[in-house]
Length: 137
Image (cartoon, rainbow, N blue to C red; front, side):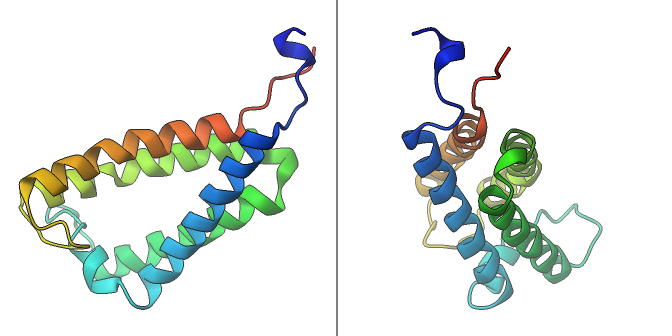
């Protein structure tokens, strides 16, 4: 069986995509309610916008992207790249949390904040992998 003969959506990719969607929706809702203060700690000081507005806006984006991953299966490849770009766009917040030594989400040491930095590329990879079905020729 060649790569092109593989079904457009494999079970592991579907599980990964749905899990990523659930995580995005959960994170987005937490931005709006119980974890706003924690997420404000990740907004870099050089961002020229109100930190709370950034947290609310990014939470709304996460909810929308999570919903789109599940609700728009025909657009999953495009949405996967958008999710990956979103994860790359918010990565400076993780870097700022590390460099500015901001405690949030139990990340209260350089080691913990450094380990957290490693997860962002993994999220980017999951977004691309879970949504990239082989194209039919």
